[in-house]
Image (cartoon, rainbow, N blue to C red; front, side, top):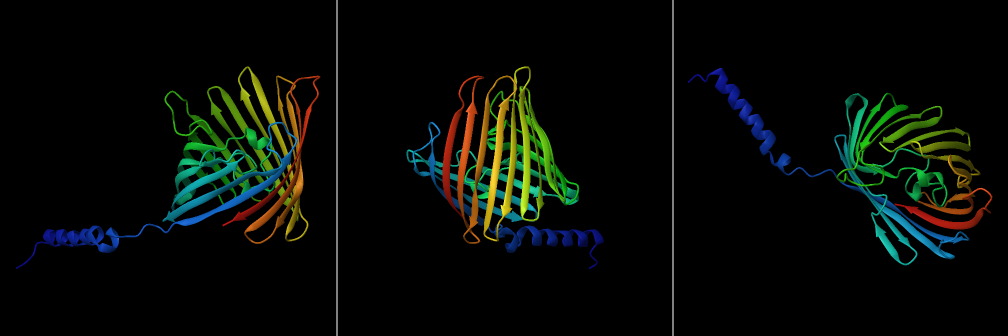
Length: 315
């Protein structure tokens, strides 16, 4: 008996769909294998600054990173861990990440969830920072954003980030809270640079970072400003330099200034010390930190001294 062409086509399509949707290999496909990583950073410290912990084990910081990727789609869970004075153990308190991201054809990419900011020179985790702790300018930068990031890579050196998120460091959207919008251009080529801004109805934040390597010497600078219309503006200035003495030892210096446009408030900071590579996974940091705080004109400045020794292990 002759089978009509339409029937043969229908039969072929039915077989194909059965193979795709009913194949045991599809129905039981294993998820992408997860990767695990993280770091541990105990710190010994001494400080003369009011309110600082006494000499001894100053803090223990760490994180566990879980991630997976499949066909260009990536998921990451970053769980920070902290142990501070008073036996306070914190899990995922202020630097947690949980997001899904994808790189598309043509240079486009997106990320949704909560992720580390792309603003500022110093990164969120101490394992990624040259000195024992982040500095003064880091304290006025955003830490994490919750929402949507859209990006476009013009080429391997030049990229654009666009933000649509809740106010930085505030978590998921709360009723009545206005979103925060922003944009940033990043260049990594003959030198490195990033410039961008975040806008909310009541303030504006802008940040510029620029740096370059000169052989064993690396120089970086940052300027940022947070402005509240008709009220005040706080400025931050950072100079950061490191020099590779040999393959295992680097020396560094960091100089910083925070000031306000409407008052005499000013904080000056300086940090120096070596960064010693013990193994491929472990480093030792030994730092001295100086701070000088002036609150009002004519008052004596408050001067602080601190010393830190950090052992950092990345796994």
